[in-house]
Amino acid sequence: MKVLVIPDIHLKPFMFKQAAELMERGIAQRAVCLMDIPDDWDKQFNILFYEETYEEAIRFAKKYPDTAWCYGNHDLSYVWRELETGYSTMAAYTVQKSCLI
Image 1 (cartoon, one colour):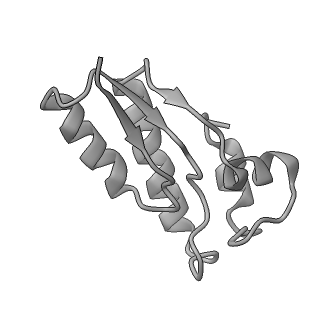
Image 2 (cartoon, one colour):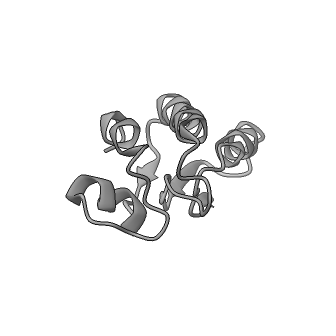
């Protein structure tokens, strides 16, 4: 079985779109997302990046429910409320309310 590994996202929603295209083309049968979905340096105040990225992540998760999701340090920093590089206090609510955490 071929598995698509989706690397750290860091507010790049296009990565989910590209992954979906690869899955649709049959390049892989399963996917693993290494997450680190939030946080990209110098984007802490742009909540739209966070919202768009989580919307794409949720869309991908619904379309490919067998995907394995591996929490990264940037994801868990919002769960634990521990600062990590790039942590956005402005986006904390957006990250915490997402269904992936």
